[in-house]
Length: 212
Image (cartoon, rainbow, N blue to C red; front, side, top):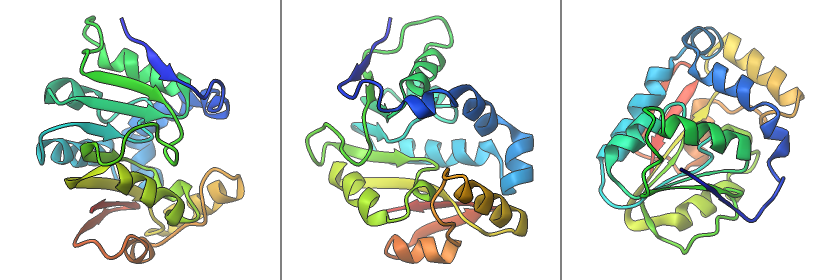
């Protein structure tokens, strides 16, 4: 069995209603290629490198349905916490983590929480992973201190974000921004600067990947 730890009740309800649609889109090779000129395999490869780079506890912030990471978490053997504000997303993540019919491993926790107000002691994770998150924040000064606070002194923060690097991607991000789904679109150069110019930074289509 599995359970979701939560003190926030229905805070993620707006995302709950879109969980099924989001889950399909994030896993769709066609959608990701047409909209963002990249592929789900890129997200999985980035997450795999993050989990292989260290030992010790893992935090996946804004984990969503764990579409790119559930199998990796099952194989890693590392103590892991998946956090999202949406309970429906976490329920999908739990089912994916137990995809082979087993229970979710005891070393994996599911926690409903706001990524900017995480309910954990500081510096507790040697790997912090945040896939497709930064483009939701107009001000990274709200997000980055919260994630850095969870990262151990010898740990790494792995982050990805949509960026406006193609004409189609820019137009789609503008549409999503007007709908209130994402912050004002950034280019890869703007994100690189906003993150403090990390040395480990690369772009695939409209998805930027950084290690801090």
